[in-house]
Length: 220
Image (cartoon, rainbow, N blue to C red; front, side, top):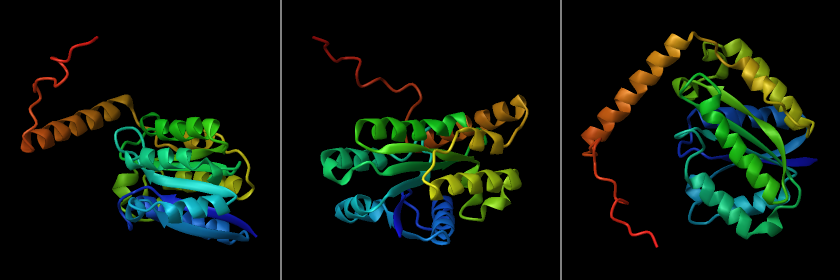
């Protein structure tokens, strides 16, 4: 029986990332995989459970939200720990799933690129990933609740089929599944999001015109 470990990179245990992790586990378990879901955040002070599971698995699936165009920062902490413990990396397949608030693909895709670059340097076989836009709106609800739910479910199922076969999964699957909207709608969404970010910064006392802390640094 093949082993797969799914790592939830989200600080939430009941959000959209966890919904996707559970869906992935159900799919692979039905195809004779022994699947374990582990959470990054409760294990930040002791990564040994994650390292052990990764060492014993044939396939690694990393699932998480997009925070500022990529996975949460602690994902990098995990990758750095793996790089220091290279003996647990021995050619396993690596897949990524990333979901974010914006409907399009390109703002979230860099998270997958990070995994691909890491795999290329650390004896892992990167086999592709899947991007889901507007995942934040689901808040843990089923994937078919998206406006493009039918296409998202179909593309994600094809992605999981590739994972089960230990085959490469092409980006075309998530590009075909993304929600298509006029450019004006994207512009409005981006404008509203930027205004919200600016408001949040002001409420926390972060001024837009704050002096750069690096201005007085001497460059030798």
